[in-house]
Length: 113
Image 1 (cartoon, rainbow, N blue to C red):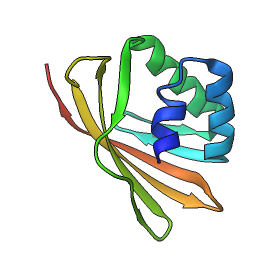
Image 2 (cartoon, helix red, strand yellow; image 1 turned 180 degrees about the horizontal axis):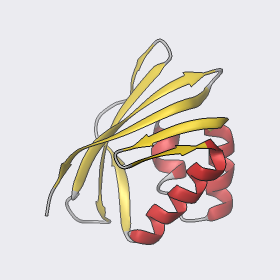
Image 3 (cartoon, rainbow, N blue to C red; image 1 turned 120 degrees about the horizontal axis):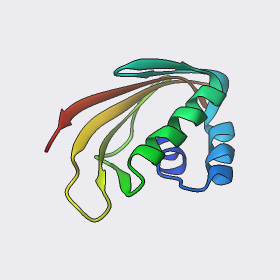
Image 4 (tube, rainbow, N blue to C red; image 1 turned 45 degrees about the vertical axis):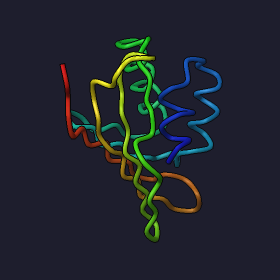
């Protein structure tokens, strides 16, 4: 869960992000965002790149510990400009199989400002 948040969505270097995506997600991962569904690693990588481009000075921070129950993982997050109070909070919930994420749900719980 932390690799998903920090090594993928916080990573500015495309090669390191791509390597983290290969290690973190199944080839056919499905990522549910509040406004769209992304199918496959390639679509996830493209969307992660778009998010970084939209807010290049913003960072994700974990908000609490990782929770695990059988094949489900959960991690809260905060998101906003580096060094400033976060403007967005939410959570990622992941269904995992064989050590990788096969389905990811991103829920936004609060938008400030």
